Length: 161
Image 1 (cartoon, rainbow, N blue to C red):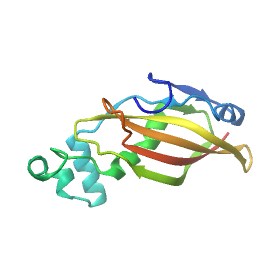
Image 2 (image 1 turned 60 degrees about the horizontal axis):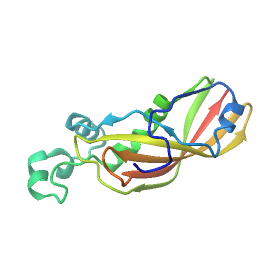
Image 3 (image 1 turned 90 degrees about the horizontal axis):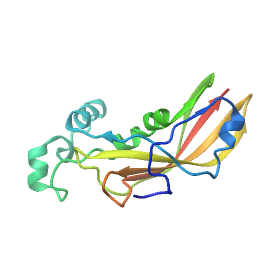
Image 4 (image 1 turned 60 degrees about the vertical axis):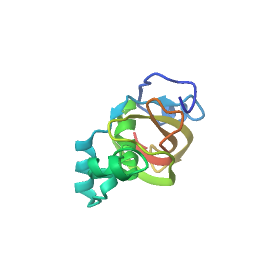
């Protein structure tokens, strides 16, 4: 599989800024697998008004696409990052916010029916405000059975303890 050495689900609980700092430069944390089924893709298409046939018309996608069937939206894959992080890292905090993304690349398609998971490597932790930290996560989304990641991103979060 792609990414660091960890191949099993990793869960941690963090209750203070110092515990977040301790993750910097360590082994990636690994999420559970999530299946990307057609109803999820259809709901995402409805939510974003992106009904391109390669995502929502399985018959046409099987006939005409180079992928042999429908694929998930790249932004659907990207949108899973916060939920996958939440299932991997429990933060006992007053508040947390998604602060943004520095870089995103969709490096391979996600066929409908595939399972994906994320590896979260803490690149940098910076103190902010009162009892807060900003975390730069290097995120690699993997598709089960593929050596190539489907998405790589620098994800920024802020946490207040």
